[in-house]
Length: 218
Image (cartoon, rainbow, N blue to C red; front, side):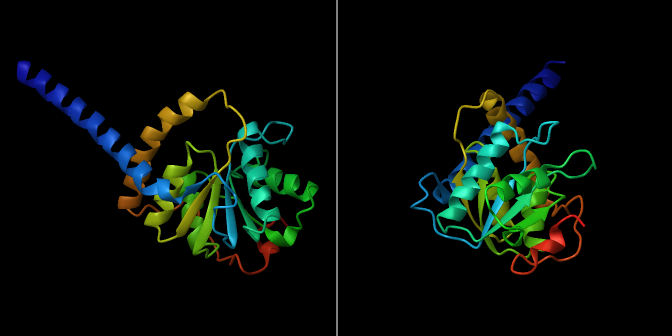
């Protein structure tokens, strides 16, 4: 029994250390590529906005609105030319990507500059499909600071030239929870990368340099 307890304690300590080391590694390799000052970030053709929750009335949640507003700021300052809006549109009655598109349309952004990824169900899928479906080779990913290290880490391992723009524009009530959740999400991302996991859906090519209407709802 004592040997078993010692083994459990050792396994627990080893697991905690592995989680902490992975968190440190992800933050270390990502930090040089994360920007808060729009004047310092290098321009890129594509701005990838990672999805988040949409309200029942189809309005954007505060976290998602801040991501889209930050991407719009990059766009109006000439830092990106095209939006790639990636989110969950797996059900007819729940649609993150068109909610983002409509929000940008209301700001005057034309459809020609907006590409929609309807199958960006998580960060891994969004980054994978940015490369495989939309054939992006470099991009600026726009999300909150707690989320950026993992997104950049995943993108780097997919041979994307990726930088991150911090979308925090207010305090978020769930911030402590989001930060803790990243510890487990980093483990999931590490596993997915090392088994070369395929996205939930892959699909036909829609080059980001081509016709954006191919990504829109018919």
